[in-house]
Amino acid sequence: MIYKFDKIVTEQIDFYYRNQGNICDFTEYHKELYTNHNKGVRIFRYGNEIITDENVKKDIINKIKKLRAQGIECYMSTSSITPSEYEFHPLTNIHLHWYEYLMRSDISWNTKNGVPFFPVENYNHDKKLNFNKTIKSIFSTRKQSHYRDYLFSKITQDDNCIFRYAGYISSPEKETDNHLETSKNFPSWYELLSDYESSIFSFVYETENGNNPNIDCQVSEKTWLAFMTGTIPIIIGQKNVVKLLKDIGFYVWNDEFGFDDGDELDDYNDRIDKFVTCYNNIKKITFDEGKQYWIDNQQKIQKNYDILSNLITKKWN
Image 1 (cartoon, helix red, strand yellow):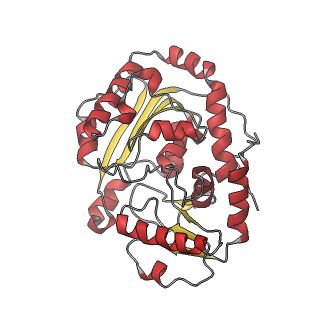
Image 2 (cartoon, one colour):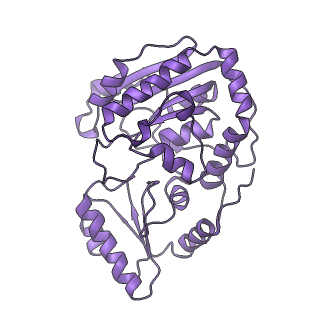
């Protein structure tokens, strides 16, 4: 269904399309991309998701400040939901980074032959969600980290649950032929979509960036996957991820299942412990109880879909 965005979002998306020839695409690993940009640049778009190098972020902000001091409208764009006076609105950023996005086809680091993120024929913004679930929950995590090892050491598989921790290599530089062969044992992107489509609840382990409170809150395809497939997501990620998602109109169900003050905690292990509480509380629910809970929350689930599909599958220009 058509979702009505605040004026600031629609105006910024229009600004983006009017300035597609004035974009500086950069990463923190290639300084020359943003230090030698042309003078007409109005948008500094980060090529990955969020800038973790504070010095690079400061450089870009200083460039924006100088341009604005000359009366020139300009912005930075990352895949963050942390509000900033120097960035586009978080909802604008979602459109800029994820519209017509190509996803890796499997869990390997291979970025060649990407597949459409959410094929518009299946995820049109006019779609009405109805209960079609056959599985109670899904917890499917790709990459290995010591935080994820800690989490999976504290939980066990639920009944009628998709439960997998691939523990895949954490960086492309370390990937070997053996890893590539192992990756074939795990679902493709479209198979993963089908798994989520079948599930009532989803446990989302967002990209972690440790305990640094200065790093912006990163949200990736992991969260968008849960929203676009009509699940009831429980999310763990950077500090305040739940609050920031709710601030821009989305809904997640951490609070209802025992996350308590987990969203505000500085220590990542402490947030994981709160997440485990949510996981164990949902384990106590039967499939039929989960079905009724989905039906009772259908309006919120639909709103999540409407907001996101209007940004990543609806054509704006």
